[in-house]
Image (cartoon, rainbow, N blue to C red; front, top):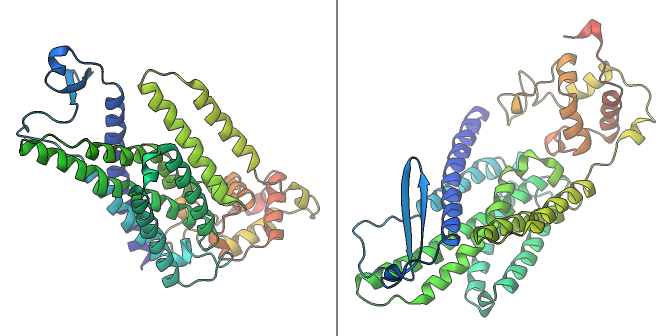
Length: 403
């Protein structure tokens, strides 16, 4: 695909995915908050079947919201449904996955250092994992395990850890993270399609036919809704993880991902309890401390020890390395087949630009070592150490050759 066209498709799909995701997650957070803040209604409301209600103010107006135990006696003329936010988020996300990771598999998904597979093999594995995991989850929801929420969550976490480990043995680290996110996102959208919406349709049908709604539908929907509630923050992290290689360019990147899923899930638990008026700050403090501990554990090993053994590295040597290994992409005129303009606007054509971006070079080339992308230009450990040596010495440029 032409790099310019690919860039526009990426931009449009990513923007749509972001907008629909905000709508879905915003609605989900609001209804979770709403459900957890309902107060016991007056008796005259309870006699009408109302389970709870609340008052709110927003945008210069007062709102009264009431939730029925099951359903009202008569179906209202207009009933608002919340489903297309979820479907649109999944559709745009899947389209983005295809454009970026399947069409661009050789640049973002396949890492020959991990597994030497073809583009078609990578696509088949990716799709099989996404839809196979969703099917496995659906089958689990039909077993007795679904009646034991804590055990169900632990089993899912263990399966997720196994999935993350397996994917990091096949795909690039970045591609593995995104596919774990795609699995979670597919299950979340599937929960809306297969669990929540059927339960709502059953409630509506029962009211319209004058029958008492079967509580089992609401109970099944609750299981699906709970999953979506606790996986929202993990999937949001994975959506932005490609910008933070410090998390995925690790020997035990799968364990890092599992740790982040647990941490973000715990943070979500704090806010859910807070909705009920239960203040458990230690949960949030523990999540914060766990994040700090994780950051310490995965901190990059200093390149100083190896760099100190090198002879002095001047700007010309650093420039030579960068021109050979980096400017195929990071240039005013990229030659890489994936980019029509320098990624993130980072250009390294001159010594002055090299000094300007020295902190980012250290972060991406030396610390996380995710650049060059999948090491397409075969930078060596010695060259990374030379760049580290030059940066440590102050990234001094040759004044006579600033251009």
